[in-house]
Image 1: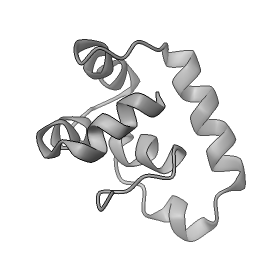
Image 2 (image 1 turned 180 degrees about the horizontal axis):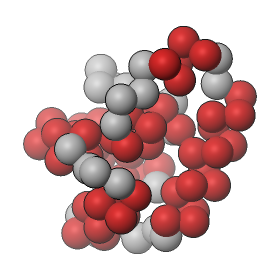
Image 3 (image 1 turned 60 degrees about the vertical axis):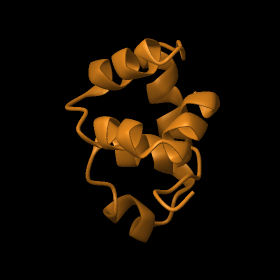
Length: 79
């Protein structure tokens, strides 16, 4: 997943597709179509671990699955 997040950080079009993801299946499918394979369960576990220690203001800024994935790995649109 970290490699996928790095790809998203470097590619504006990929980032737009990630932000348009309607759910976990879309995120996993997008990652897979770009050569990064992980399961929904792996994604959820990584996100849960991140969310449990994130401050409220960071969580309030999450508006999409793309935001959630980027937040889980400490990345942002500015990376």
